[in-house]
Amino acid sequence: MYKALVKPALFTLDAERAHHFVFDNLRRAARVPGTKALLRSLYEVQHPSLVREVFGLKFPNPVGLAAGFDKNAALTDELATLGFGFVEIGTVTPRPQAGNPQPRLFRLPQDEALVNRMGFNNDGAAAVAARLARRQNRQLIIGGNIGKNKDTPNERAAEDYVACFEALAEQVDYFVVNVSSPNTPNLRQLQEKEPLIDLLQRVQERNLSRAQPRPLLLKIAPDLTDSQLDDILDIARETKLSGLVSTNTTISREGLVTDAGQVAALGAGGLSGRPLRARATEVIRYLHQRSRGELPIIGAGGIHSAADAQEKLAAGASLVQLYTGFIYEGPALVSRINKALIRG
Image 1 (tube, one colour):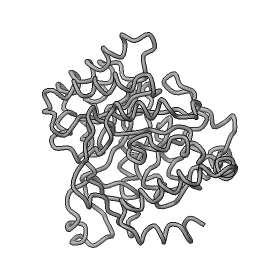
Image 2 (image 1 turned 90 degrees about the vertical axis):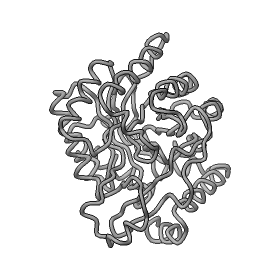
Image 3 (image 1 turned 30 degrees about the vertical axis):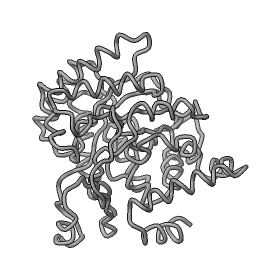
């Protein structure tokens, strides 16, 4: 039904407008008595073999929703009815910000991909924390993806990450430090070894001072070299990270079917979706092998089928996340993956 009826209608709309249309209608539908139970019956898959214990948390299944879809934690209760084992909200910054000028989200249907330069548009950490405090579903595992405000210089970036951590610590189950988005100027410079160690150490110091520290993860770009990935593993050990999210969007445009001129006309932004699948899996496999499987990895990038998810898990991911595949395939993708994992 989604691919035959819903998706063609949504794809007639501007990509960002379609996103808000889906949000509004899922929220309205969930208010109708019986709708949440109906959605769970359609999409939720429960089985003992799906349960995963990763960085001290018990996930009912390994399929999560990646950051970027529900930036402001506006729809966590509703998204929980679609069968996800966890939902990662954000990226959240300390202060609200509008993000980059529109249009800033584009589809490449021939490649089953998206290009986005959203720019961390969000309501700010205080508003997101207040919204999470009001949620009804307390069983759903929530990840908090955090970043810095656009106008915060890199030398003060750690202050923003600490501020986000403090605001959200009571409301999320794990944190992801995002220094790999290509859409905030100079943000990826924070992936360099020295500034990244300093940033993570400052967040981790605050984290470990708590009675119940939260798992702290780092989200990395697929565009890093093997040497840079080795540095990431050294940093993860030195700062006692609980895991990695691999990978974010790519700035590469190689291998696309869409006309190169059309792609260039869209301008800058991170590419996600099917073209990222192979590279994301390659990065996961490299990190898993180099760390001897000791560092949990959430695998993301180009998961559009059950086979794609199984590929990521076989490469060494402990959990997987969807975003662009969810847009192109619809909510049934979550249940298809979980059913395939039960079959083995």
